[in-house]
Length: 138
Image (tube, rainbow, N blue to C red):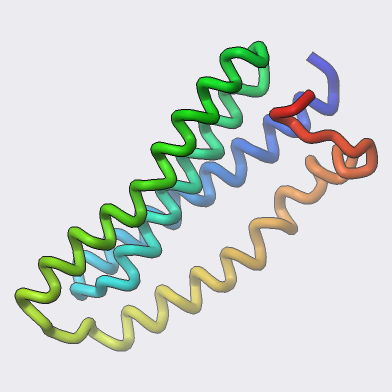
C-alpha cells in the first residue's frame, strides 16, 4: 500500500469517526428535547459516516466490488429521507416545540465541528489533491 493510500485511508477514517460522533451527540439531544430538525440532521451524520466507512473499506477493493459499494451507497442515501418522514409523522401527532437552549448549543457545536473537520483531515488529503487522485476511480 502506497503512502498516498495510507494518508487517504487515515483521512476517510477520521471524517467517518467525526460523523459518527456527531450523529451520537445530535441524536441524543434530539431525542431528549424532541427536535425533528436535529433528529433529521443526526441521521444525515449517520448516513455520512456510513458512506465514509464504506469508502474506507472499498479503497483496497477491485473495481467490480467498488461498483457494488456504489449501489449500497445509493440505498444509504435514502435513510435520512425515511427517518425524517417517520419523525415528522410522530411530531405531527404531538406538536411540542423543542427546548431552545440545548437545540442552539448543539447547532453551534455542529457548525464548529463542520469547520474543524476539514482542517484536521487536510494534512492527510493535501498530497492527494496535488496529484489529482480520486480514490474510488483509481
